[in-house]
Image 1 (cartoon, rainbow, N blue to C red):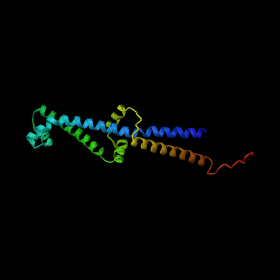
Image 2 (cartoon, rainbow, N blue to C red; image 1 turned 30 degrees about the horizontal axis):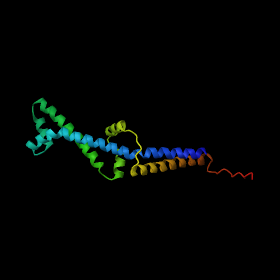
Image 3 (cartoon, rainbow, N blue to C red; image 1 turned 180 degrees about the vertical axis):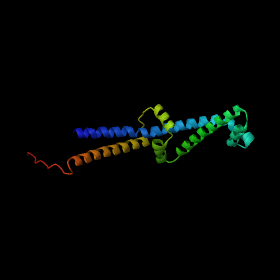
Image 4 (cartoon, rainbow, N blue to C red; image 1 turned 60 degrees about the vertical axis):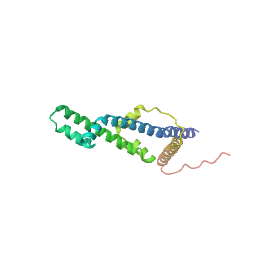
Length: 173
């Protein structure tokens, strides 16, 4: 009886963890998109200047600022370069998040930018989505967790028993 309840608890835990995956991916995508739009807005004025004087080449604008003897221009060159690096990071993250669901999932869970992932997790509110993807993830994680834990327990029992089965006790009837 206890074993049956333990299975139910494991299955339920796996289900609840699994339904969080699509919500987490969605929250990460929204955060990346917001930062991307913000970085584009931050570069907008410099992009217009580069468009007007350097045929749209921001790197040429940065080189021009660095060539100046004025420390203000040198400081602005550093600022523009920082904005460019950040914008490229968000563009790269956004491009990955437009790919197939498996690539998005793998990226968010394993290879995402650590600062963005931490920011997303800190702002994430756990929820139970009833979307088909969330249900599929929940059931998949629940089955996988239940299978792994039960297999591990059976393996541990087999090792402890030395690979032997207990002799079957005859029934009193």
